[in-house]
Length: 276
Image (cartoon, rainbow, N blue to C red; front, side, top):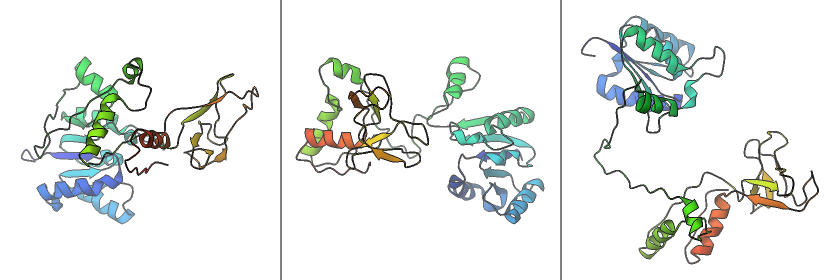
């Protein structure tokens, strides 16, 4: 801004634009900022486009299409949450906003800043191994609060020790300690239902959705197989339709199985499952 240059700031989703806009307005004022995304009306888009073209806006904020704004004298391009797949347009004309930004940054000889707490693996590889991208790390939080302690447990080692439970010994101890202190525990699992897929051990047949061709999930409460894409349901399978074997087995772990395990391990605790 001090060098009289402009900036483009991209966010992956239109819903994130107001939040980002609010932050920038508090710093730079409303008059210097323009917003571009597909949810604007034709009139709003026309006004914002002219504001940029006439040089009144120094900062353009928006979703991926904002990369094509008629802004001049660009000093920096910032892509927030750069790992997000929505920066690639699936509709015609197909384009990758990150690649377009890279080209524009090169033409304007300005930096392209890719921000993410979980970088795209290609971006991270280029930064850490190939050295094509300069790696900048934030080791502290903005409000100077301490970062949470994270422990990664190898469940194969737990199995080798004879622990066949879904819970590692360390997690079990942590939950037990919480209960003694009358504290609450939240367990996150990114799979709904009881078992994530059903397979015949004899021939390898997997029960799939007739509409989506993906594995059906077993829900124990309703005793049904469900598709989490289209909502298709069917009764549980006891005999393999391919080889007519009765060796149907349920594999994978969902929130219902975890809830059952918690009730078994900690029978006196109160459980509230929001997975279904």
